[in-house]
Image (cartoon, rainbow, N blue to C red; front, side):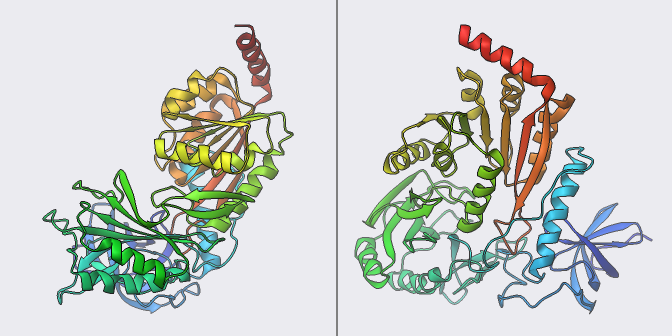
Length: 468
């Protein structure tokens, strides 16, 4: 019998989807249910029904899963910032490990992918070094900051967040009150009116230095200079207050222009025994400790001898480039964003690393034009994965080793399939890493080596390049 929207069904959750929803079945229908755990037996109300699958929401838990726990956040069932606070952490890690294996099998066509247990370091709470909150005005006229309710644009107001670094919580609660007192207009996305769009907080986990940034529609924010100075006095760890202008009608958070209003436009952070400058809109992994642990695994796996040529594609501010440059003969970073290249150059100079250069441009344009074949290529692309031209260039130049760091396993599996087709590269290891506890997201580093059959071809290419 065909089920209709609004009907109640009973199902047992048996799996988790790659978006974090529980997966159950009712007759021939696959049912996706948020906030459930494998092992839950529940009454579910169907909210969207398709021919082969449906989406539902919990109406009643009949029998809770042994993996179900009480969330640390009182609004975890409403807030869209986390999906998995109701799942015990050991099971979260097991689910992510299984997600990586299944994706590599399904999309990458790897029969027995060599996937290690998920790397984790410190606590699964209080780890995020950056939080960016949209702002809204409540029905009673109060300034609110938080995350959107799941599958909506309804804001869930927060005064603290258990997954962000706890040193940021006082600022979250109190800055809203300061905005309220100044009567600065809060941006209305429907009307494209108002001033302040987001509040962004960032902290150096090792240094404790904090940045506060308001994302605004334009620069006209009366009294911001005086308020910024008051914030610096109130919060000893706050080193800089900035405005970022985003005047576009868009869901993108940061605009292209940032102005420092008080203090300095960056915080200092220590990473892999180096010191980095991190600005409000700089990409820097949100879980510093786990990112550093993954870097150590990359170093160990590569076992660099000091005579290698290394290319770090999608290098950002040099977070991985610079630590690895200390172990090779020459390193080159490729990056599309001009500001990131400028920061990478500064970070190299600041840390007195002289065997590294940075090139500005798209990786798909720069990589095929390189005059020498690198021994090691590090890939760390955005969620969409590598451009086809990048894969083609690697298959043509044949570097001895490739390390592919990915924040989306589906595109990683797609690209690994292309690199390993016809046996050109061999996938030797996959190291998942939990950069986002309490969510369904998983990072992974894949290690590939050039096959024995292609090593002679690589030597021939190198000879031809050196003679040209």
